[in-house]
Amino acid sequence: MQKRPIVHVTRRLPNSIEDRMRDLFEARLRAEDTPMSAAELKSAISDCDVFVPTVTDNITKDVIEAASSRLKLIANFGAGTNHIDVAAAYAKGITVTNTPGVLTEDTADLTMALILALPRRLVEGDRRMRAGEFKGWTPTHMLGHRVRGKALGIIGMGRIGQAIARRAHAFGLSVHYHNRHRVPKGIEDSLCAKYWDDLDSMLAAVDIVSVNCPSTPDTHHLIDEDRLKLMGADSYIVNTSRGEIIDEAALAEALSNGLIAGAGLDVYEDEPAPHPSLFDLPNAILAPHIGSATFESRQEMGEKVLINIRAMMDHHACPDRVLPPGARLSLAS
Image (cartoon, rainbow, N blue to C red; front, side):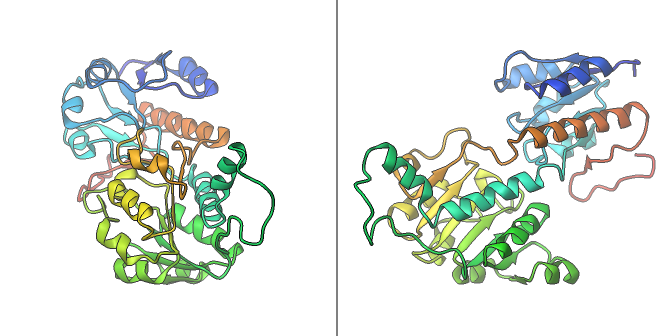
């Protein structure tokens, strides 16, 4: 590899990160902050040593096949890698890395904000105020539900799920969780969290559901029409993970028919477009994928990308390598 590797970045990054990339690498940065087409991705990946995509880039096997033998690293700017065919990259000898950990607290903060705002109808109230509908306080105006004493069910007890659990206790919520594998007892005890092996049973027992699991073939439409029916009419659901985990059409129908009380979404099945019916529902909060949208988080994500590229340049193991299921990391990796 040449002394200054060619690093192609697909989206605009924080200015300080782009400046560092210019100093350290032969950086190919974009002036536009829009998603690249499949043809543009193939062109970019065909002539670089390091490729830096984001969640908006669909790095399919077809795109990876367009990479030259020079490409050694796909350094994703983001924690999730479901938009990258990691198995195809692994088969071609290309390392894939991500930026875990640095967005945990910010995403948990936004999740908690949605959990608090939904039962108290905060966003709906703001809309009514701006529309001039507030005519003065009355005893029955804009009644919502108290959060304290309610049960929170977390789907996916990873870093973010655990951070949400810690926040939930401060607001008097009891914590329940469903996970592919039960977390160690020490973590479970520290979070005072009850494990449910059966997701359906948990959904029927809790008041608020927070979706925090990764997007995989097994979690696609994990929350579908049947599971929404298990939830109570006074229950709420929040999703700050990946949109395709919830069947959005079924969710819109459940909200419209009063099967559940409300939903707070930061991610969407057909992002960036939510299901059209959601726009007309006062009991839906629609955030524009801002779970990690803080200056601090984006800066730290960029620094993680830089660290992984430098490790690759120095022939060290990349600290945030992502492997496909069943793959083994050799000592030489």
